[in-house]
Image 1 (cartoon, helix red, strand yellow):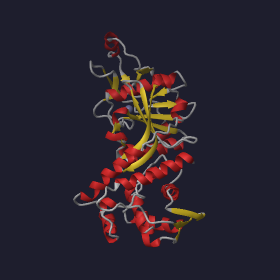
Image 2 (image 1 turned 60 degrees about the horizontal axis):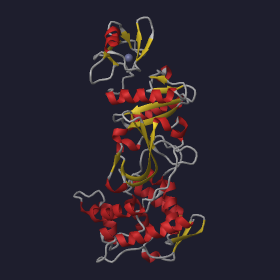
Image 3 (image 1 turned 180 degrees about the horizontal axis):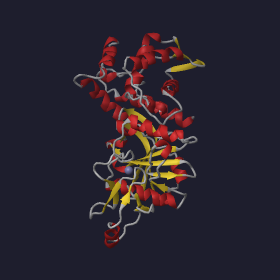
Image 4 (image 1 turned 120 degrees about the vertical axis):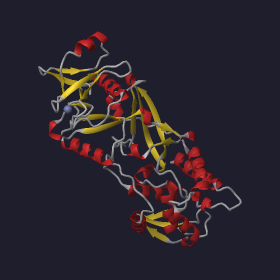
Length: 395
Ligand SMILES: [Zn+2]
């Protein structure tokens, strides 16, 4: 904690780096928690930054997170960034919901949490619920230590981070926000296209706190970076290994492929397309799209007509039987996995696989694209992605 009360009720906030003597003088003072009124210890060390801590036996409801120096520095850095723009309160206690956000903006009703440790989904839901009750918008900023790039252009977003996906504002897409107090820098991850449960392709923007306002934090800028080639390469790698795991989590899918005489590595290239709302689905993009293809678009169905409702119904069955998993995104209240389904069907019609002859009613035009077994399946993936790219550039 950075805020405490003295015996006389005076509020002390440890924002500055005071001198050693000053802290020695402060140590004479008795400090109390503004919330539980329990005794606090002033901790000043060479390595640690000065902060208050409850006595070990305390059961204060508001000490959720063991505060690392990084977390404390983060709170301070964010406070300094915000105080130039608006009224901001450090560790303000909101008694009606018994919560104490790291920072609170009373004018815009925003609670900012700088999250450095893991937080369970239930705990996150509970805290958000409290904020929503007070009509306060929670803004979760993750420690930049958690931001990780994979090789070859994708990013790693762990199960722990996905739940902090912030809702889109105006026309932008959902995004993740990271902050690093050491470099006074924000990292905004937007235009997130989910590839697998924990890897995504996205636009990454870095902003120094000096160049970014609170407003622009809520309205991250779009830039259309092309990731088509790294996407195809990643998909090509996945093709070669997913069938090989022992105790294979994809067993039902592999069985379905086998029944249809499709070698696992040579599944149709129409599966595993980049779908904008695909983040609603936790399963691998190749997996959920393969189920749709194999459930409805078999080669013998050419020239047949299929309705969206049929596809949706079967997809829900796949969810029920846990062949496809949805992602829990507590802050995303608009949209659902159905958006991903519809966008996928739109992509399939973009590449000429199907045609929407009337609303939600599709004609199957051609067979899917598979490469003969002596050829690398990635050739088919490039064909499809090129078609997509060409059409999207025109349109
Ligand atoms: Zn307390």
